Image (cartoon, rainbow, N blue to C red; front, side, top):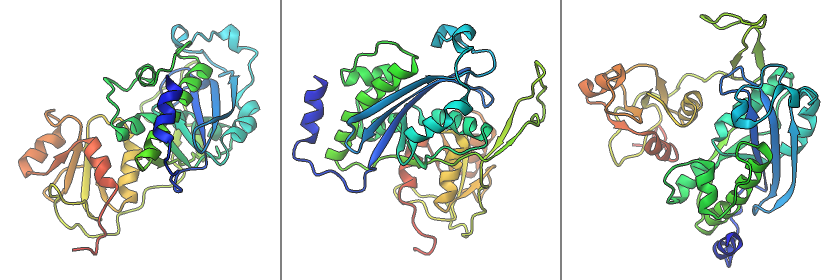
Length: 326
């Protein structure tokens, strides 16, 4: 069934030359979701440019701490005790990632966990771009009731055998990614690729308001480069149906599916001015909850500031007009 669907979207379709030449489908299991949590297992399926599997790799990782929610991933302290440290597997992991686009389900999470582990090891992951299969399914307009991995798998007839096991999750994602990639190629869809920025600075100093526990202090992280100031003048407010223009002031409010810092970086890289507050000069407010009572939403209503959701903003970011254009 899966192969039939895959073949159907690829027959007679020239492959887009702009597409990447290889992918590394990744899944990591972790001790938790916080910045200071650790990877406890990792799997990589290497795929060629058309999504065909080349090989796969799996490893346990000793996090040197409590394994976290064992009832989810099933990896106990006893299982992990004899596992290699991340520094022991970093070179092999790098060989699996090198020169490929990292593909993951909710890729920002997997990338951040991987980048932090490499920073702890005083190294960098050889990854420059990532592709989130959630974002790709949205680009393709797949009729999914939600964006869980199991839902995406079921859509393409992929059988999930061991949920929250890194190797099986990576296999399932690789099998679901192949028909997604071919559907994108058939429609000449632009892949939602995002930049991967390595973390090169790591400090053992606790963040303000945090207390060390168990004799160890939480780590704080900073991106390898700071966001530059916007060099363009503010052209005014965003108008519905028109493109964003470089120099426009953009503010964000509430939760976002893409990590907030990464979303702000994308806006800044497009030439927009990222603002932390709302004023009469604000061109646009991005929020997924326009009915909330946050101070930014309230001020946006008072000032008549245009409001769009995250998905619409992502579309607008694709074609930001130059500052000189009238």
